Image (cartoon, rainbow, N blue to C red; front, side, top):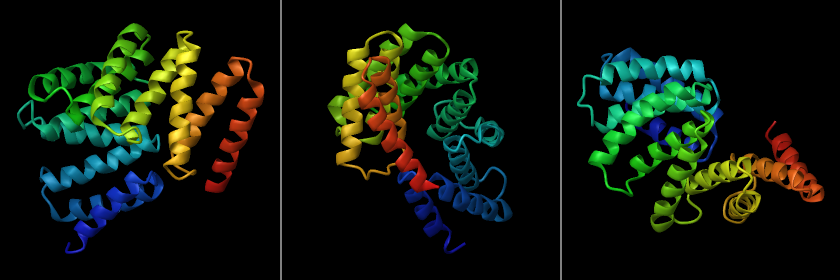
Amino acid sequence: MEYLRIYELYSLSLSYLGEFANYLQLQNQIVKINEMVLPVAHPSRLNSQHELASAYVELRETENAIELLGQVVKLREELPVADPLLLGSQHELARAYLVNDQAEKAIKILEQVVRIREEVLSIANPGRLTSQQVLGVAYYRNGQVDKAMELLEKVLKIREGVLPITHHDQLILQHELATIYHTTGQVDKATELLEQVVKIREEVLHIGNYYQPWSQHELAFIYNANGQADKAIELLEEVVKIRQERL
């Protein structure tokens, strides 16, 4: 147990770097240790299970994530409705449902989480903005495009005032909003946003950044649809190169 805190810090570092496979492996070990020595509702045990479920979500192992988060949420429902730990686990469960193409379930949870966080947190609070962002994506996946665009544009405007342009959350949000712009025929807006995201990730983050191929692939798709096949091919070749290096 004396080394557990070191493992936890290393695990969080792996998550931050986008090394989710290694993050999952280490977090799984942390959970097993906690489950052997801590009571079922102990905060540290629940925290480690929450983090493991987050790793499952990132690696698209959504059934494992939903099962584990369902248990964590059920135990944390003994807490006050506005407790940050409960809201955090509900948010993550909704995110797992969303990744698993269950947008309606995600929306049901997120609307409640967002409502509570809007009541108790400041307008620029990161937790509040993150839940609003995921709710906006859920609206989009559920075909509620206008609601999605309105909410995501609101979040982007607030974040532009408080976050650096290189912040991970900001780049993810810009990517998601660009996808909606493209879907609704606003190709110029979509291209401008995604070109900015790709440029920042190339210049500031390492070229093999976990999310870089995702943004490059989406931008290539837009280029191709807009008749810019040469640009699309150039980007896709870079995507293939990065992904081959990871194998």
